[in-house]
Image 1 (tube, rainbow, N blue to C red):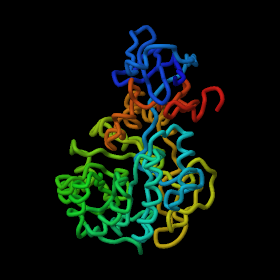
Image 2 (cartoon, one colour):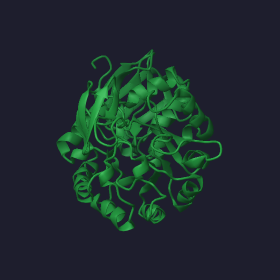
Image 3 (cartoon, one colour):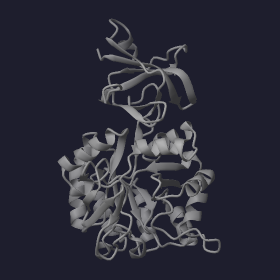
Image 4 (cartoon, helix red, strand yellow):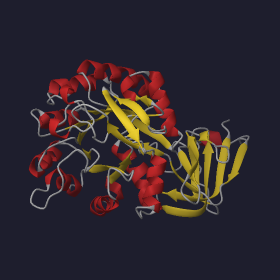
Length: 402
């Protein structure tokens, strides 16, 4: 019989709200009960598993702590000195391990612009880790993006989103492609959005020079995500609202935000939350290989990035000085959200867990603390600093021993 872990005494963020003195009961890899300490236990175990000898119980008193769902990152390129774009299991597992230790228990592997054949090779290699349950899927960011808004992507490798090329990458991922970022105003853009939607792949608008009308047309065609809203797209202007207004106003669109204090001013983040709400905001890291590491020089696909004071920028070439992703981890995004940005713990939890889980189609398994779901959770202290991480019932960082 699977061992049981009972986590008691913490403030627990449940889908119904914050419960003081809550209790989460885990058996094996699943949550079997989540409730207030004095509430009736709703047992999620099958009938046959309830009879007989009770499992050995590991009881943990987490008084003075918070329990929140494991974080879900739908846009991350690497960490721990490793990059998903390397297309190797070793580098990918290093990046995955780094972000897990910071509370991200579910993530997509994001690639960066490269040669189509190279991207197909990366997709084939990373798809194996999806099949093994280490990743939730793949996200192609580029090469189908605007040369005018390419940011940290190699300009010489950009191309228009020909549906045949888009299909090539989707096929290379062997059913594991979850999302693709593209600029819908480019030739073939709208047809590619429709193709992605037809194949169950999220079409994300990003690195785009699109105007308001063209962006709205892309949403009508099936685009449902805004890639790192405000960044790598025209600014919001009073006579030319551009893609930002179109993406913020449409209830069908979930907007990604990078909450690291560099990519967005707090007033802009507040504006996005006020317009879209936590149910349509997904905090992401957009982290590159330097996440969890010190300042220095790191690769980002074919580009060379210098990290100084925790900020990553392209170090040379035609896009030198451009911000190159981030060094953010989602535990710091959560802490900043509630201590600097003034969000409630419930709002931050939705933006880091429930909303991205829904967008990725995995909310039946992760994204909230509920009986029957994977035992993915994060333990925070009273300053909202991470002190524990559990994934599928196993401690990644054990409280008091991290």
